[in-house]
Length: 254
Image (cartoon, rainbow, N blue to C red; front, side, top):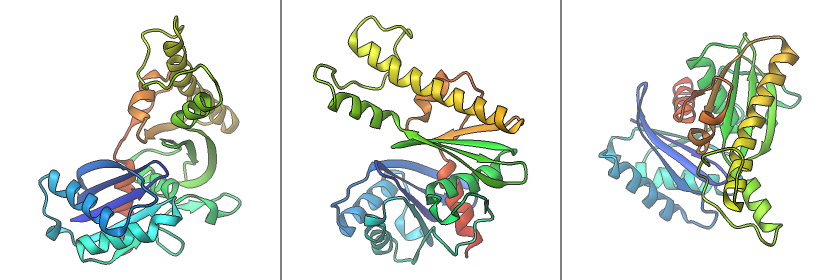
């Protein structure tokens, strides 16, 4: 059994995998001040709450876009599992050909998403990851990573809007009953959710026009289940994409 951990700016996604099967997926808050012991307790809690035994973990892998806590979480994983933990980074075998200007700049989360995507779905491929930022990755029919787009995630837009205005309230991200809001809360909900869905639809269409190709479109990330149903583009929702990618990379580097 392999423990897979993806460290994002807002949340950490973790789960255990056995061969090709994802045994569970949990999401916890990223805490920049937590110690390795505190993270180890979180890991143990997540594993045991899902009916698994930590002593069965014989391998571990981390991807991270938060360098300041990568070593802390790595230490926590090794403290809990007693196994050496791999960290996705330069020098690891991924099977992905990266064609951007500086391949070293590509975030490990996007690498992991892309590795899972080319193994799970038909290319050419657009992969959307909706987290702190909403990212779109474009992969051609030869499984080359061509580049992509980055825009503020929904909660970043929400927080910026609320923090820079005097009278707009914080809201829960629930889909309003109609696009045209008739009160302040529904107006914000509609703007954020339908606006983000419209941006994704527009970017996917621009990629199609620019390249002259049709794409398989896959979405993952914490907000994907809320936004994907609002899009007009046909999008496959895969909440386990990161864990699948981590498992593939782990197996390539045994």
